[in-house]
Length: 347
Ligand code: ADP
Ligand code: MG
Image 1 (cartoon, rainbow, N blue to C red):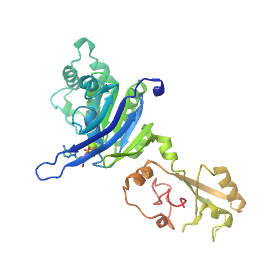
Image 2 (image 1 turned 90 degrees about the horizontal axis):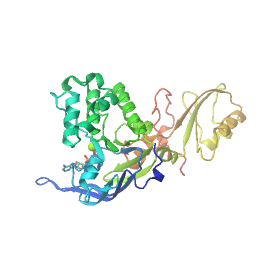
Image 3 (image 1 turned 90 degrees about the vertical axis):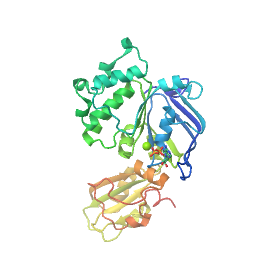
Image 4 (image 1 turned 60 degrees about the vertical axis):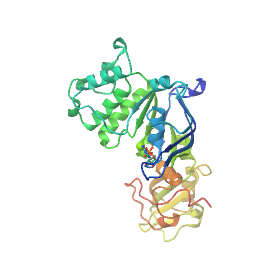
């Protein structure tokens, strides 16, 4: 990570960016972006999250010079896309959402061809280095059609890197890629980021974004509804839950635990909720002890990006806060509860 504060300009700066697609035939015009403001610091691993149709690809494609904006300003690596389109375009490498692949090229040929398109001089080309960086060195001379899905994605990343852009943008790069290959792809992308490349990615895999991105913007219906450091976005929820098993049979919730909105579950466990900013876990454990209970087992739950995402975009429908009452928590299942964490203790 680069110290972005010390640098003169961010990797990407977008202000009032709007896009309305003209409707085809009788179709109504579609306002895909509505005055979006967004800053991606240099060196960031930036996640752009949003449901289908939110406008993510539109935003990325405007930056890449593939879609013409309707209004607003976009600056890539200090270059305004209107005033210095060539420099702006040279600063960004885009891995498109669709897998478009020339089956009869070898990876080396594909990368060389792309370098030619970008006007990279022969002596400045680093095709072998780029292929090696993406784990494709031993596949450099096979036909691309024989590559696995994961390898094809990595070849697209290699093609996006031929002109050595400081900003790499990946649009849904792991859609349709199996978990193992996703892991490989991410290791390569993380390496590029550590080496200084600013990475922007859109993904539907919230867990992936949570694990990888240091900063996240959530976009919904053409508007940015949240943008923050990943931890800050999650910390904003200020909610944790404990599910505990105790040695003693518990017929009712002990009075001393009422402040945690404790509930007794059908399986005999107790479910407690608290605000980490106000209550330390040690206090909760002390109160359990005070209530005369002997802890046998404990699992915790905290808000994750899925909760943030659902709250901000209204996705996933979900149940009302009270619906989780009486539901069994299955600790083996990550989303084994249907509580909407922001509501039970937001009075
Ligand atoms: P996302 O990538 O977040 O799924 P898109 O940017 O692809 O969203 O699309 C945003 C909205 O713009 C959607 O409603 C989509 O149908 C519409 N849209 C995208 N591309 C076009 C186009 N070329 N013509 C008309 N409408 C489009
Ligand atoms: Mg898209």
